[in-house]
Image (tube, rainbow, N blue to C red; front, side, top):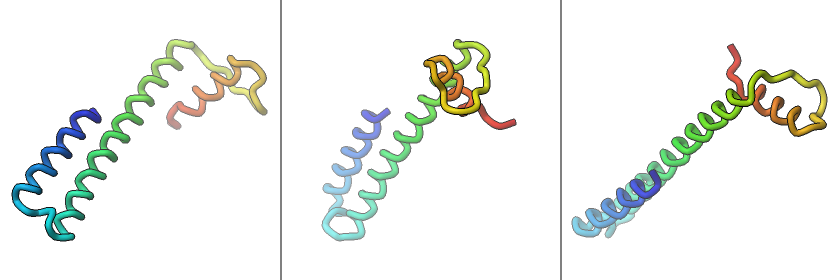
Length: 89
């Protein structure tokens, strides 16, 4: 995903240089906004992907118990993370 974004940025820079868009400040700002949008989209996609992986891990670990207070064992900590990750219905 990031590789596709970088290719798009390089293509945009190449087109901008050919057409002279990068000679003025407005063209540079548009290009900067496009670059930031590509990286923001990649970050959002990665966050969504990691959330799905965490859902799968919590599903594989089975039912989770609710703990009051700080977790003492690794299993209690995993239960706490998975319960916190579940959507509120």
